[in-house]
Length: 50
Image 1 (cartoon, rainbow, N blue to C red):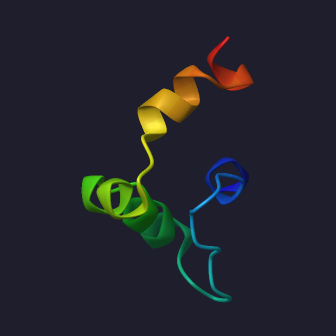
Image 2: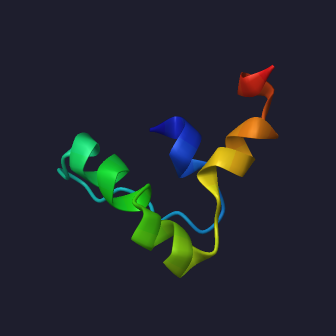
């Protein structure tokens, strides 16, 4: 959750919201298109990818 929470444009999780539901919602292709983010590209450019 911290990984996705740190990406600009990704909404913060609400109190008492199911984390799995939140991650599925923010990483859907529709959410990527709406927010103009490409999570695959962000990951490829991250230190976690190395």
